[in-house]
Picture 1 (cartoon, rainbow, N blue to C red):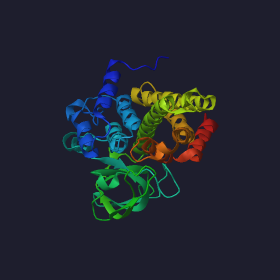
Picture 2 (picture 1 turned 90 degrees about the vertical axis):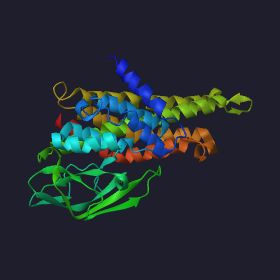
Picture 3 (picture 1 turned 90 degrees about the horizontal axis):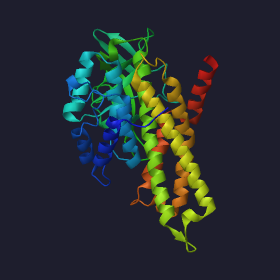
Picture 4 (picture 1 turned 30 degrees about the vertical axis):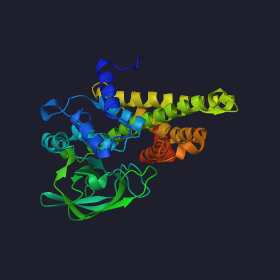
Length: 359
């Protein structure tokens, strides 16, 4: 099978590389991504987007990861735009996607609960009160929550089903607490105490919206992880090729070459897994009604293989790898955060084991 990009995909990736210039101020970089239309590739054309799919958005996220760019692209694209496009009502699409198109608004989602990553049976509970839902619960590891225009919040609908509510993070009853991350990227614990929401994503209590949210989250995280590891490998190859010890470039030492080869294998495998997962999700249910297997494989490879591969890259750089003026430590920290975002090694392995038991 040919996993090469078509002309459109190559243009998207090339434009993203052009926009994501190293050293650009994060606020200016965010505006540049918005002006280039790279945040809204999957938004329908009638709403001001390009009408493309998951794969094209994943290409942008991969380039964001390659540069370890400090922008809210993963949150907005994978945790906001894509699930709203795939599961939202026409009115929800117009309101939420319009804010991204016109204002470069940040969207995000609260996927995790204490001790339960990517929960499919939320303990956060919502009960009806007239036309609104009243929400109570705690969500952890919510990226860019403090800057978000809206949050997508998975909830138990008073025991009648599972859904995803659209919540304003500045509304009464919502407390946003900043929490530390390995990369220094903004992330929060969100505590909901009687917060109100009038919007149930897709008006659907069957769990379909939550399933789409999880799929888009995994596709986005693995796409960024693909770029993170590829970017770290590029930096490492350049370093060991130019750094001289004992009169020879480091790359000519057998042990160094073997370690770089191990990182290359991990990076290329993650690239293939992430690209295949994004492609299967992009082609739609008419072609592939069950894209979750590839997503689970890609998530597990990211969680298990990316952190040690990035550790090898750090090791081969020596002290330079943690220099604040050198970019590798951004890749290292972001890779650890992404491994946690997909649930970690044990969670992803449990998902694969459960899938194998039912297939």
